[in-house]
Image (cartoon, rainbow over all chains, first blue to last red; front, side, top):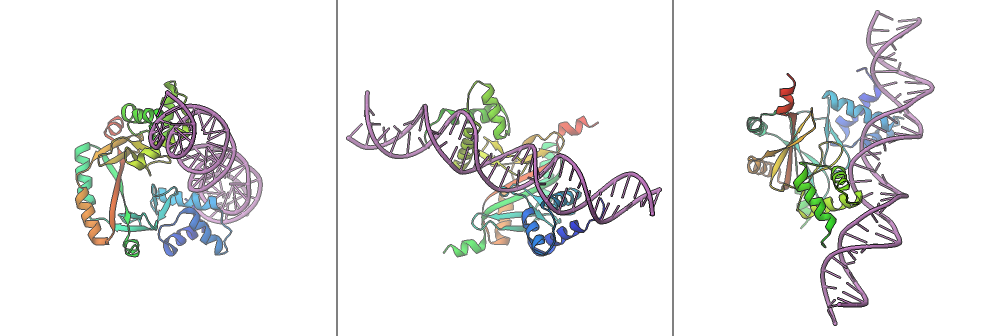
Length: 127
Length: 127
DNA sequence: ACAAAATATGATAACAATTATCAGTTTATA
DNA sequence: TATAAACTGATAATTGTTATCATATTTTGT
């Protein structure tokens, strides 16, 4: 994989600006910051970096994929009201994986947990 | 929600024929079984049944949604080699949810776990 | 049992997210 | 510094899913 200025811009945007952006969101902020980057380039590089493990791809939340620069093992919570995606620290991973590998005979290489419900902010606003 | 012959056919196909089919897969087998059902009807009813809780929608595995007639709480494993989706019984749910609710202050209404790796069959075939 | 209202259907157009294509450009290699 | 490999922007194409709409089926009230 060669160096590319665009890829680094994309990574920077992901790492510094927002929390769990979609490809289009990153495209928008780079576009605004006077780059003439192409949407295809954003998709290409996000997928490439996700593939290489430099970032993480979060799927199954809405209809679009989201990306995360935090590659440290953690989970996600999506709020049904505001749609915001929160990081959830993971402490239970080893138990889950052990149990599951033993009972199934499968080799587990990764796992994702997505919680959904109402975040604190939204449930406070409800009243 | 009124009765509809098509909806029952769709449910039957989901419950009896295959394990975690996509909408299109169900459409194909119903089509083959001489029905002249429409793809739109399949999507409509799968979503409707998922919404009402009669079936479950599984998202975030590939680029398409899959459906599950097993509404009993359980998780999924997707094999990187063959793409097959397996059911994983869940025993750890209460712990995870408790811990997470306490540490975040969020109200968790549901959660999904997707494991991925290599299934037994595929890892045996590898040698 | 029957008319009216509500709900569902098939066919297909529309849509939105993502990927493929391709000519031109940048980066690495020898 | 020339050649090959990788990358880009622009945009066409693809794909999974939803919206539309005229017609058909199901339910409800009398």
